[in-house]
Each structure stands twice: as structure tokens, then as C-alpha cells.
Image (cartoon, rainbow, N blue to C red):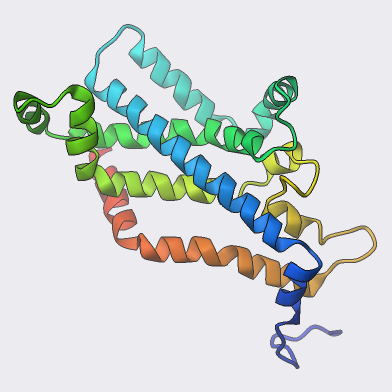
Length: 235
């Protein structure tokens, strides 16, 4: 309405209906969920394994490799966008959710490595030694002993990875070309056209996109608080 008001004169859910009827938000939601879940899976698995390796094994060049990983995290996605775009085009991955997943994961894996390494550095080695004396291999000890006792840190890194995948814009804008790979962030941005701005649907889309991260943060709140406090103390 013009002039705009703080509260609407008429309460309606028509804008939410339009999201799925005219703006293909069902397809965008599926793409966003795929990107977020697989980004979380890749970042968590590879980040945990790499962090455990850096924490428990002393090998030549470990400190230099850790510094290189930190440097990757320091860069903004825009700084590495061109080489990543070239790689995706070379391997024929443009306009796929996989390209967006790999782009976001390339920045989330370094974060998971550095975050989880602080947990593994402080994890009592005596517990691992006792488990290996009972017959567990190093790999089994990691998955059956260390990881279950590091749930707060894993929860924090997983939630951060999910939020990064769910809210990614720069990689999605660069790598997606059609609606088959576009997530919610691009779907909402497409409501800003040169001829018209769909204000009602724009606000409804932003509210809708916020719901899933809000539910996840509320559900994992206990682990997130524990993980952040433990990480701050250990750091």
C-alpha cells in the first residue's frame, strides 16, 4: 500500500500461495535443501578426518599446510570465483547443484578443519590409547570414541556448513543458469526485475527462507552453545 504502513490493513496468505503457484518455490526449496545437506555432509566428513589427522599425526609440512588452509578461508568467495568457474565449466558442471555444493564446500571445509582441530587437540589421548589397547584401530577409535564425545563441536561446524549452503548467493548466482539448479536465494532475487518489484512475495519469500534455519538453530541450540563455549575456552 502507498504510503506503506507498519502493519498491513488486510492480513492475507496470498503471497505465500503465489510463491509456490507462480514462482516455483517448491523447486527452489528442493535445490536449496540438496545444496545445504550435501555441503554439510562433505564439510563435516572431510573436515573431521583432516582435523584429526593434523591433531594426531606429525608429518613434514603440516604447519605450512594448515597455514595454506587458513589462507583459503581468509579469501572472499569473489576472489576465487573466476578459477572455480573455469573449473566447473571445464568439467561440465555448470548449471548443476553439484557445482554450488563444491563451491561452498571449498570454503567450509577449511573452517571445519580449524574449528575441530581445537577439540581434537584437547581430547584426552589416554582415552584413545585405552580404546586401542582393547583392540580398536585408529580409524575405529575416531568413529566410535572421539566423534561421539565431540558432538558439541561437530554440531556447531555442521550447523555453520548448513547455513552457508542454505544462504549461499555468490556461487549460486554464478554457477546456476536455469531454474533446475537455482536455490531460494536466486529465486528471491529474481523477484527484483527491471519492470516490477514483487514486494509481497519478496517479503514472504524472505520469511519462508528464514524458517528452516531458525528451526535448526533452535533444535541444536544446546549443542551450539556448548560447542562455541568449549571452542572459545580451548582456543
